[in-house]
Image (cartoon, rainbow, N blue to C red; front, top):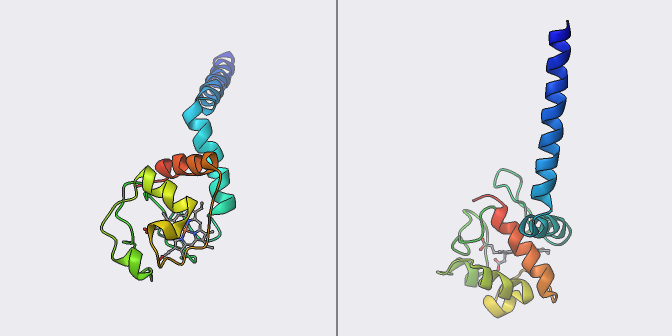
Length: 133
Ligand code: HEC
């Protein structure tokens, strides 16, 4: 009996230590930025973009693993001519320009979105880097 009680106590301890470890990760600056970025992504992008190719497609293509990926290459997505013919990849700089004003990157794009705040763009891009791929 007492042996069993001890096991329970030990596992409670382990849980506690894990919670502390998780909290420590959550407050590191990069993780905080990606965390903010996730909330911003949900608010600003999720209406049109999933992060999972398995989900039904929305107005825009899924963005899983988009950082580093060649633009305009999600199979079956009806891209604008400009994105369809793109031969460059989504670097952080490209994404920053895109989110500032999509038409400055692809003149005939039909993504209707603009984000004037550089910090918001940075946080969303930091989150996208963690989002699969
Ligand atoms: C109102 C709908 C809408 C919103 C909101 C929106 N997008 Fe888009 N997005 C689109 C559409 C539509 C396309 C395809 C554009 C084209 O083919 O020219 C697109 C394309 C993209 C692409 C290119 C994908 C590829 O496969 O090359 C990226 C990257 C992207 N969006 C990121 C974002 C991010 C990040 C946000 C939020 C900050 C966002 N979008 C918000 C509709 C939207």
